[in-house]
Length: 323
Picture 1 (cartoon, rainbow, N blue to C red):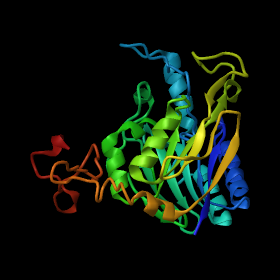
Picture 2: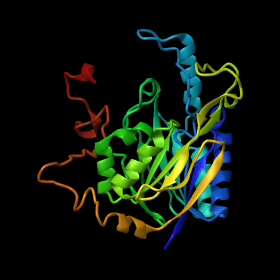
Picture 3: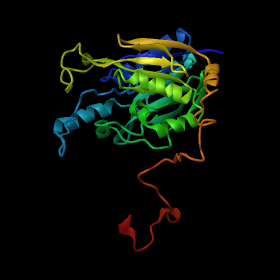
Picture 4: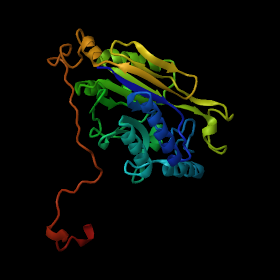
């Protein structure tokens, strides 16, 4: 049975997370009104992707204005339990759709590039934190760990997400394939011509549908004093889109679109995945576990772990100063 899916190509509102959430909720409802049961947003939709900002960080020093830029960015990030995400959850509930939502997640003093998985019937189902921020992203985003690489059953099939250049990590892709992923979501900020063939390769490699969502972002989404080394004119395009939907044999069903904000749709058939795996199942009959094996550590990694305390939390005599 075919299911309609949608990829949202839109601009973040990087200066107002609540307004951005309201925009996202409206887009969820619009896609659902057109029959979509699964909706995929771009990388960093909530919180924004600060394309072209240096955060005042030459090698060896951090400028005060860069710290100010980080503080501004930090305060536009969201919590999975916050009101911005709650607004999207409510829209997904009303529309009865599954939403894959790119956001900048705030946790303590650290930001993460995250995808939230929102089930229209059950609410927030889980998240994936980007394992490997790219280049200067490492200055502003923390690293995810192996505990947030889930997949979820949806009306359209088993869904998971791999963010932007994580898609160039073969072992991460292999782990996603091993979970039986049917709809491989690729929120991204990569709008280059080379992105589409990479997505087609992944569709062929995993014999899965690939849904890639990128923002269409202009300079005027930011205030005039936003530092951007790429462009100054308000009409300048910082991210040009290129979103697409690809089938398990690498055929492009929708997109790539570089014209502006839009919603791409496709009706997907799970039987096409089965047909594709007839001659290639990368973690099944085409694997060679006698030669190659992949180990994956899915344990959460915390900077502080308590291994034991005295009864009642009392500190033994003579070690009071060590606490």
